[in-house]
Image 1 (cartoon, rainbow, N blue to C red):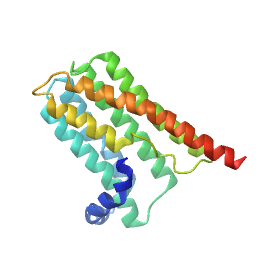
Image 2 (tube, helix red, strand yellow; image 1 turned 30 degrees about the vertical axis):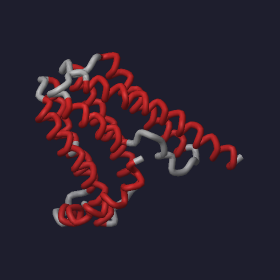
Image 3 (cartoon, helix red, strand yellow; image 1 turned 30 degrees about the horizontal axis):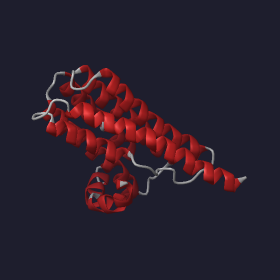
Image 4 (tube, rainbow, N blue to C red; image 1 turned 180 degrees about the vertical axis):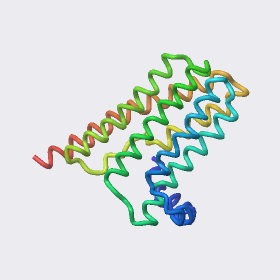
Length: 194
């Protein structure tokens, strides 16, 4: 859903990408660097500090935007960089959900529903595209939507403790719906290919 605005927010951060490109550090460095604030985020959620957990979600997400902008600014867009970026994104999601669940901010079953949906939506896209389908980043839940819903749940947590449960449940259910959408979308493409 928010993917349609990707070019707009990428252009907003393109100046920052050019500035970071002047450091001569590779885009993959910034991708890997996003794990550092993610680990700090996971720790804060684990100890129940939702405010600082939220701050470090934002920092990790910022690095996730920077790496692509650095790649475009330097002309260093590679297939491996894309694979590496998606891999680190999955680790960040595991750390996020793990920290929330281990910190007691959400029930384990809800965390399982969320992480399984997040993982399967990413898997179906990757597998379909590896088999020749194009542009399978369709559906209700892309990475930006998932992070945004979880952040809203964390913001509301101070007033309503079940909000993180509901946010993760929404992410899980909508991600599983996205799995179905991506399967049907790729099925149509494969039928045309044959």
